[in-house]
Length: 219
Image (tube, rainbow, N blue to C red; front, side):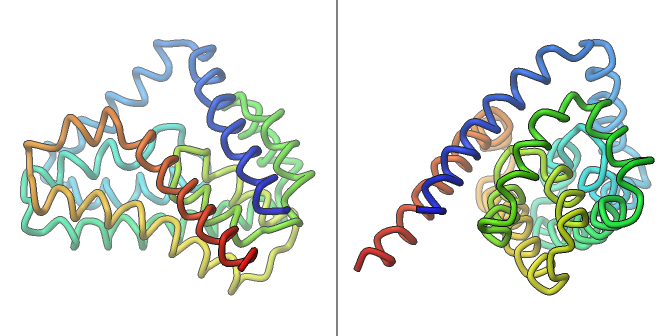
């Protein structure tokens, strides 16, 4: 049951990620967070959104949602437009991560994993990646799992680019447009709930999705 094994890997990865983040110097993480958030009030917010989306898929530690959410709240009628910008940037960043893994892993990839405290997690991903790369990329794109690890590992494993692109668009697109849709309908009223509980909701959704695949296979 490859899918079931990936459920275990994903849940374990989320827990390890939170543990590693806690270990990181609080000042460094806070500085990265504050730097990201301040762009929401800038007149160049959309450019920043695109750039952060690119960086986050390859090496940046702060989720791009941190910037996308306040931008959407400020003009929720254009939420889907903002989600589209975020998705395009994220996919381009995914290609950058893929290139790092494909051609520059020893010089850049390992340094990124070490700096983010994700080397052990990356080793686990590398060991299990070939079992179901498509599902792994979709899951990492949608959930709080560090997507950048999977983009770099995809390059190391030389995953088919079409498979990589389709899976990335599904995973990242589902995440960004779900958030945009909620903000489009509910606006500022749901902002705090999304920021606080989105990670939990995304994991539950992924487990339900996996359960659907398992049922289909059994039937």
